[in-house]
Image (tube, rainbow, N blue to C red):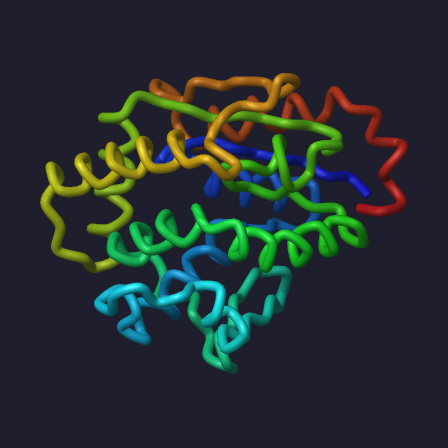
Length: 228
């Protein structure tokens, strides 16, 4: 299988780039962040963050997640409900960051990610794909950008999706997410030692995609062509 790992902080463009690269090479795109958002959404929906001393581990047994691909587009289902239109808000992102620090949550989702990559050629993006989830990926990329550039991208995305947001709030949310993801003890955000680091601060989406596309094309794709 051809496995491509794309990591990076919030707003670096990794999801958009990964999705486009997957389309170019006609392979699956796996958004691992959506899994953590789904768990965070579940905890928010159950009102668990308002309770003292609740056990995330104890709730995982009731968090029935399913991963499905409809026309090669990833959909996350929670107890039969398609969550794709519910998990892109700032409060769900914050909840995802919180639950991602929990070892049992990461173990719960890890096998789902690895099992998929064993049987499908895939572009997988997240924060620990190259370091933890797919340490043997054929290509590892770490996308980054300045904090202000990343916050502005996320702000535009939220506005285009019909939200009413203040830029400074989005900026502070991204800044807090960076600190949380980088400082957590379990699978902290960092580039794999053999990852190609790409600063996308001054890149358009198309330029970022072409950069990663060129890296993929430098691989010996003949080894994987029958699997694509």
